[in-house]
Image (spheres, helix red, strand yellow):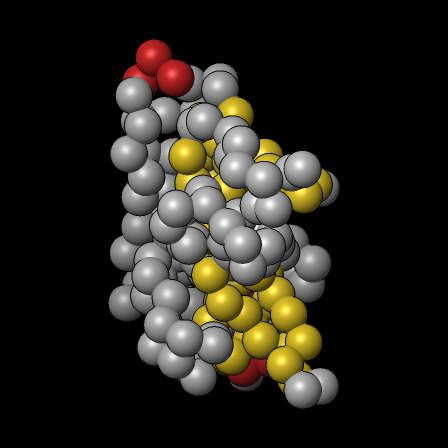
Length: 170
């Protein structure tokens, strides 16, 4: 933990740097986290990736695409699925969640933990109809399933999530 000297009632006094933000850290020098960045708690409201925390319906794996839905008046999340279920993608997760756990869903941004061919950079990715939560580089072509572009490949392990409107195939 970093420290600094501040005048407290005219006396030089050693103080801890701020790490969490909020009123207790007012008038302190901010400190970086272990990755060399400010924590989101240190940032002004409205800055950072847009997220939503909702309970999971079923187990969700890290880096899955996510569908937000109304379950008896309670907003929940489940794996997106272009198959016969037609659960369009609204976001993605970066961690795994058990059934009923509160999941942090990212509504936009870079989704990592994927496996692409480097030469496919710049190509679109689509919601999978074979594996719920997964993405593929070939659009779905099965009647009764949905086709939804969900982003663009930017590296061998990442795509930028930006879900387009899905449509049901005839």
